Length: 367
Ligand SMILES: Nc1ncnc2c1ncn2[C@@H]1O[C@H](COP(=O)(O)OP(=O)(O)OP(=O)(O)O)[C@@H](O)[C@H]1O
Ligand SMILES: [Mg+2]
Image 1 (cartoon, rainbow, N blue to C red):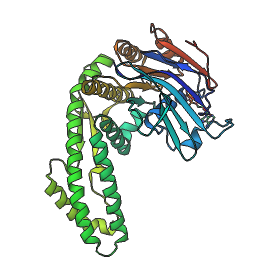
Image 2 (cartoon, helix red, strand yellow):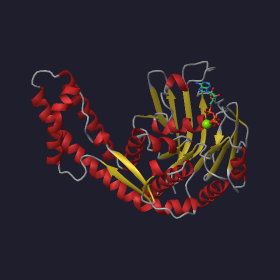
Image 3 (cartoon, rainbow, N blue to C red):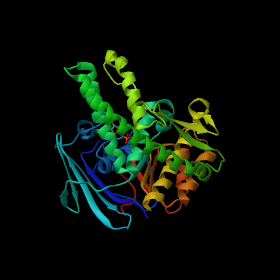
Image 4 (tube, rainbow, N blue to C red):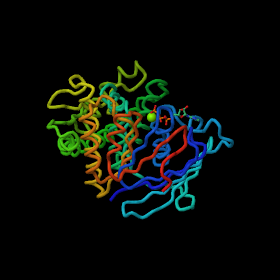
């Protein structure tokens, strides 16, 4: 019940040496010392599914293996859809282009592969950077709602055009701004409705997720902070127009739903100000698993869950609870660690697929 990956092979991708990696249907533990290629494996899957990396400033030149003979990366895989139907899926990446194939035939529209990903610094960034939170929510709402993605890209275009008018001030720009503000107001309204809806929906799963993962009773809530909350389209348009003189001086749009923020409330307290690092990590992971549940609720299938060494800040009791939670869960998970103690915990999981990576080479079971 859910997307799964069963095989991966790459050529010329970072330090990975091109071995075929076999994944089990449930828990896959990826072990290896620092700098040996664990994250690179997750990254290759992420690039295949989403056509971009989770690492900052990463694209073809950074992906391409230093020792590669050809300036060409191939990532091939076998996935299973939610009906457990297998299909092969591959990408050929070049400096300026890419080709994607399903079952050996080139495709324009890539198959939708639902992934959630978490890396060691995400909890920290989530708690410390509003821009990270904003893109977290945009990305995750977008995975549930393709209409949201369209609205967001429409908004981005409007915003870009509005900023150009505000900074360049071509002739008749006021009339053009009037038109844009009307569009911006209605798009903002629709986006806000979807954000509110998402928060209400995921809110229902958060407390349970905390309880399920960490066996602790904590209330986890999310609230949306927006200057336009509960405004009608007309009211939003009015605010945009009132802000215009100031924004004309600054030459860009200062106020808009691109500045919305989200507050995570931990037992009613703002978790950005109140939580310890361990609590921040637990809250973030619970939010992520709440999202996985919401995804299942919507699509009757699970996304693939990629967990890149999240053991930091958590004590061994929390590791154990996390491991037990993963054992009880039905989704496929790929979890990495370089931490010997956490590895011991993961090693106890019966039936888990173990993958050891050393200098980009896969050492564990071929089948
Ligand atoms: N384009 C590239 N070509 C070859 N090697 C690369 C390339 N990009 C990164 N590497 C190498 O990949 C390795 C990093 O791999 P990765 O991030 O997967 O390590 P890791 O096993 O996750 O380590 P950690 O436990 O520290 O997170 C480094 O040794 C780095 O030098
Ligand atoms: Mg890593």
